Length: 101
Length: 430
Image (cartoon, rainbow over all chains, first blue to last red; front, side, top):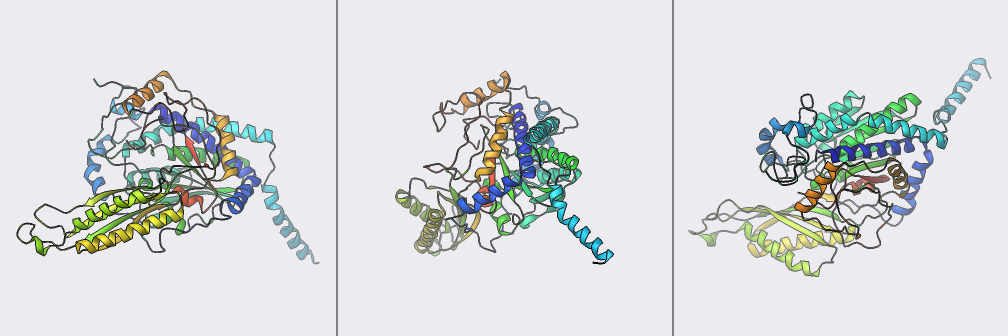
């Protein structure tokens, strides 16, 4: 989604995240409490046992062919922020378009 | 004590005091005013947020193929003074960006991959792909990095001004749709020296929970059957069909399904079913997700799946092997951090939606036949305007989706911020 809904919601999320970062960097008790919860509540009776082994490789081959198939077709539609205010503008979409022409 | 000795002692004593001096005490009033400044600073990046959200949307890259996205993000971060370590866990599109020094070390993460066949013009309610058949950000992972990066940049500026010690780490969830990297980052020690992790994910609401959120964990496994090719009409008796192995495995699993707990979610796709009908397939593969609510149940179902694959191989005279492609634990999120985040969410409040936003949301909800009410019985109608309550562990869950942020949650205290950049009532992956 690259709509004003996404832009506004992301900005609100960024504000809340920045404020929580401030809490983490100015209030040592928050980090202490977070660690105490992790140790005394979360992992008190539950230990993490990974499903992957020490040698399982990440499956980086996945999606390679699909992406190769479409990338060149998609490239002309990459957003050009230096030319267009928004991606909607670049694609010539009137926001919102709710009915098929 | 000699003069030199005294000097050394005094210098040492002074250095010992340094952390105390650096860890300045702030009053509640100071913090409130600093938060206000941060909000203003983030709002000053509104244009940057829009550009990043739109840019990543337009790249529309599938898991493990996020090359344009990662090059773009790391270049933005490098320009802002972050040191970048690329190729973490041997994943070419993964990286970790660091700024600052000393503790605490706070990690910020968000996913960057998209889903197949979801190419779609933004702002259009009905299906209208940009490139027919191409991948696209139907899941909304194009917005999370802007959330953390512009939060980090605003915080960094304040830390520089206030001489606040601490380190900010930014990392991407590569291939989240395949739940295929975060357990690897954890295994390879990338969260070892981190004190806390704030993860962000797009949502129709604005919130952060703690405890067990009711989701399932999973293992993602591909089963590869190997048989013997033969002319399917000329000498079928000389062939051993790997596709038979796959089909028998699927039949076996679907019979087993009756005897699994209702919290089980398991699904598969045949990724290789052979080449053409007149050749008995010598190779065939089926890809399963085994999801359950607990580690023990996931493990049990995974082991049953392996046994069924071996039974299918025996019946079809083929050989089977399996490879794990992804995994996620059931998550558990941190209470003190969620409480801190929730207080801040309330300070920020829901965005102001205008008529166009609401019109767009309602049109999408009609077209996707969104339910009238959510799982809690609250109405789904347009965009949310209020913030939900802070919730702890669920008492009961029928099970549901998975996210490998859960594996990080077992390595360091972690929370997930759900930010309201999506339309409520959609199907998640469309």
